[in-house]
Image (tube, rainbow, N blue to C red):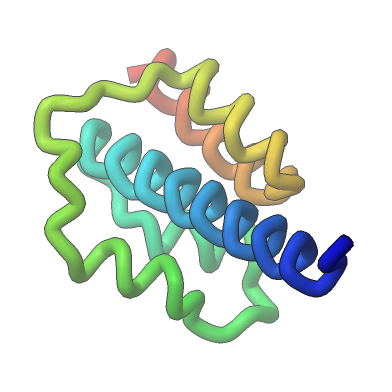
Length: 99
């Protein structure tokens, strides 16, 4: 069995899934007129600019017609272990309710 090849496939699949998660986050932000970089920085203030996030923001993702509901966004972020970002998103969702 070629374990190195299997490991590479697993890593590639994770990267693809992570990119999809970022695309969903960027679209969710766009749906609510929020800046994804600002929310990310609130969640992870000690990190530098996230290059994967910037790449998705700068590219045309083709998700124009997609609406991501709040619960799905929170679930996706938590699935990838982005709990800090999920908390920031949850705070934004609470802000929507108070407007």
